[in-house]
Amino acid sequence: MSVLNELQATLDVSRKSWLEAANDPACDFSIQNLPFGIFSDARNSAPRAGVAIGEHIVDLAVLQASELLRLPGAGAGASAAVSETVFSRATLNDFIALGRDAWRSVRIQLSHLLARETATLRDSAGLRERALVPQAGTTLHLPVQIPGYTDFYSSKEHATNVGSMFRDPKHALMPNWSEMPIGYNGRASSVVVSGTPVRRPNGQLKLPDQERPVFGACRKLDIELETGFIVGRGNALGEPIACADAEAHIFGMVLLNDWSARDIQQWEYVPLGPFNAKSFATTISPWIVTLDALEPFRVAQPVQEPQPLEYLRHDGAHAFDIALEVRLRPQGVQEATTLARTHFRHMYWTMAQQLAHHTVSGCNTRVGDLMGSGTISGPTTDSYGSLLELTWNGQNPLALKEGGTRTFIEDGDELTLAGWCQGEGYRVGFGTCSGEILPALG
Ligand code: MN
Image 1: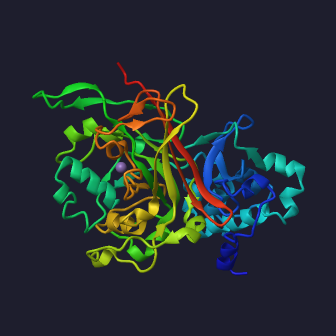
Image 2: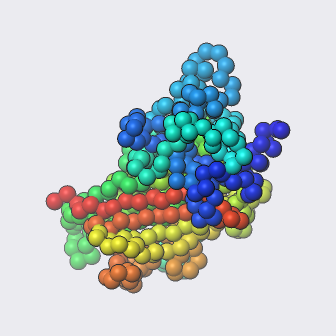
Image 3: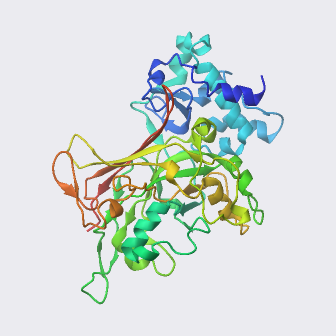
């Protein structure tokens, strides 16, 4: 069977796992998913590479050491040495740098090993005990070392809402918005993995009744419901990535919460864009879902009018059918309230266009670079991806399930993003992306 046929077989809906939890139609980590991450546990405190399946993590270093997993092209010299230890490292960067053939080979081998009819691991209690770790009780780490983080602004609904609120509803979109995926260079050093508490930032606040700003804790702390993609193959300085080739440069996707201090942002953002309002933290989900796993959920992006300039054109479908939601749970409360449900397919600019635009100047990207989609808002008032929009800058408070209301985030609130592709009887899910807000430093 050719590699592409074998890859296609990993997406076969009828393929089930001997790990029964993975076959639940509502389980994020089906055998069709196989997302990559970095984990550690009580038995081995060293962070290492794993793949989520059902309620377990497959320890890739153990599989490789047991010769149940081989990397292609592990030939002579330095590359062989890299391949032998690539799963024992604290980030996925070196594995990702081996290239798409390696990612695909691992996916094909794992899909086979975990399939119901494959006895190798299924029937060996000793191997299973070493290679499978229950997700409960493990620590998930930031999956990649992120050299650079860029955030885009690619939802037309979001840009229109923000433009209406802060400028003029009649001219909500700036003329450049429909011509290019607007973006800015974010702060890579403060990207954290889901579960990391986030401290409310202090900064300059410009109150409407005062001439000069005051210094203090952010009063309008917000989320931005986004996805992000991880660059899997970089480009050399001066050599742009063509739009048609861009998806081959993407390793996979994560959920991303671009925490935002709206009051700090409103005062500082002219003329160079957000700075302290965004740089204090960005949270991503721990599992990277590969584009290969997302392939069955490829859908057409919205029609783009005007037609983009030549370098931003690509044929075919380049959006993905990913359902998204955001939940808020106040401290000490059992049940979270779902604040919004939305969809990645609404995004106007595609990931391929974002990467083509990012590099058209000659800007280089590197393995592990993180690119945020921009806040994902849908067309209805319950499908907005930020509290700024959901409450219309605090004018319309949201009611919480167990009582109380919210305009912006309060101390102790835990915000959770969730996302998944729903297939026929199975899911390709992202897990969750959470963070609890700690009080500002006094
Ligand atoms: Mn953002």
